[in-house]
Image (cartoon, rainbow, N blue to C red; front, side, top):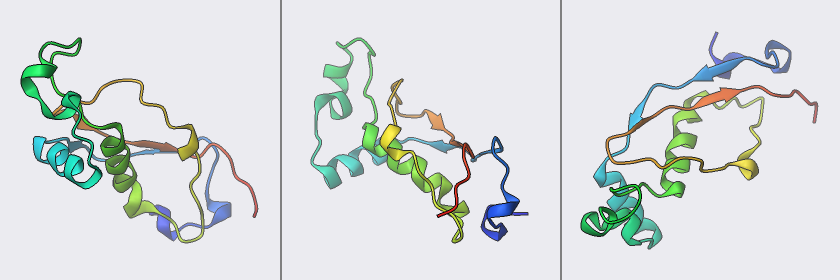
Length: 112
């Protein structure tokens, strides 16, 4: 049974789903910089980034978040809502050629 075919009573608190992977590319970073205007050297300047603690360019946090939301978009259920975006934290850098996945967990059920 796919998530979009389910109703409130079909969900169980604690169940999870992990998406397939999505590899972050240099094109993703360049495109996101153009869309947002965020051309900070952390994302764009390979030579400068090599002098910094991570030694390479990092993806924008907002890019990673956007891709993560997109990875779960195919399972958005018209009968339910998702919450928690206000508690997102960026705890580790994402680099070019890193592959990310998203694990979504049902942590609570509440009638509206």
